[in-house]
Image (cartoon, rainbow over all chains, first blue to last red; front, side, top):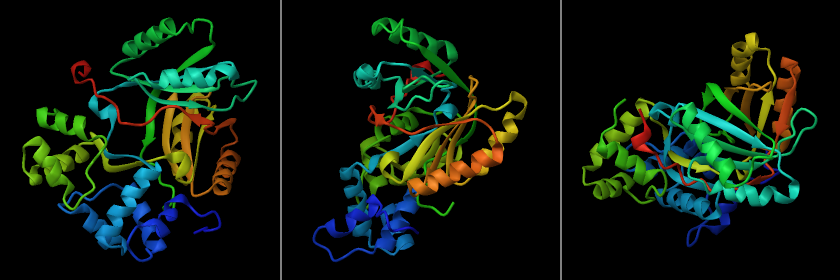
Length: 181
Length: 154
């Protein structure tokens, strides 16, 4: 493991209140283990403690602290929309003037059917788009309807954009940043 | 898989704010008015049937190591083959075919930026296909889970 760039999950170490130092290796193992999900047993945090060599209290404190730091965005059920019947998803990309991208990004991000919204660099000449959002829908038509609504509502008729429907999911799983692969 | 009302409630209530306490499933079971054991069984079965990919945290990717969205322009007849090779590359966690000249979109992750660049260089070298590297500049959404529109589902 490369500890030169101290990963953020280790920043929890000196901050766990009221306890002695916490094993950095234990936290690393916890971080890895959490990427695989919580054990479905009555005391999942105790189980994680056994697996990582930490105490149950340390596991819960670390998780709470990672949540407070924003390293964990949410803790809960991670739904596979495709299995549920959300058959269509489109990545919609826009070429927005740099001075407006932040405002539009924030506006789009508030829509309930938009699940992701990012600014990314343009790569001219092949890729002129700098704003990305993801629209999930039950079918293709519904996604298109939602997009058209969005365009009308925010006056985006003149904003160059492209709609990239997904045609096949080859792989979809949670990010694994610290595991060995 | 057909979900019943309790399954739907479970999903509606706990895409976020899963309790962090000794017995989280018991706390959830009280909210739902069922037994702790039943919560666990239901979660297991939702996971087995791939309705859930897991129960657990969603990490903020930009802060949990390095990650990057990349796209490849792949000749149509090669796309399954190339997708399989991308899946085998270390750190890939999403890989979708999309309708565009850049038709294969994947997310590559790594413990740090240097390793990420190395992994992408290696893959680009192996595949010899045009690749776009599109790191995140700014995220505008806050991931609170996604309100499932149960009525609209088939």
